[in-house]
Amino acid sequence: MKNRNIAVYMRVSTANQEKDETIDNQFMELKEKIKNEGGILKSDCIYKDDGWSGAILERPALDELRADAKNKKFDTLYVYDRGRIARKFLLQEIVIEELRKLEIDLISLHDINGKTHEEILMGSVMGVFHEYERVKITERMRIGKFRKVRENKLLLGYNPKYGYDYYPRIKKGPDARNGYFAINQQQASVVHQIYEWAANGESKYSIRDLLYKNSIPPAKEKSDSWSLSVIQRLLRDTTYMGTHYYNKSESCESKKPRSIAKYRRTVKGS
Image (tube, rainbow, N blue to C red; front, side, top):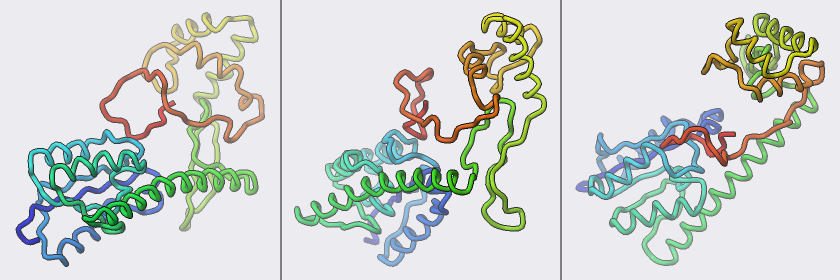
């Protein structure tokens, strides 16, 4: 073990960060394991994807690791568990098979490691459980948030509507509070103006032109002109009429993404 070139790979998603499962926690355990086995970790073979979804295989540090593996930069890779490589079993197997063909040993702190067919099979079974665990965690979080909102009227995890500011929940400490909305006076005056124009018979096209002429930028200010679809949704949104809905929409994978980026932190972008 002492003469081996050792690397480590770590990953944690944004959702896991909320539960204090940090990169640092993984790194502490990995270093301790390597030290106890008499190994030495290469300083240039520490790979970490902090805040990246395990449902996507294309990640900066993982890509670098796979390239370095082909260049024989290391011959032993330590991971906290197989779920760090990927949450989907198929994606795990793609990377693990690559490493196996390159004769790189994969050592997981919390899975079955082995060389025989039986041991490899049992390791794969653990990989299936990682995928199952991801599905169950996602479902438990969804049900838990929905229950808290329904029973306690708590506001959890919001991108506020235009015209409002959202102050998130603080769980502990002297400043503990529930999440709540507050009116953004500057944006609220724009909402009133848009509704007034619509009530006077202006079309969404003329409202867009009026917003531009009055130098009123859209919320994200990525362009000078408002989108027609945003104006239309704003005029139909019941929130501005006194009735707000929770869980009315959900994120999903983009079928036709507006921009093609090499790396995406999450699968769901729409």
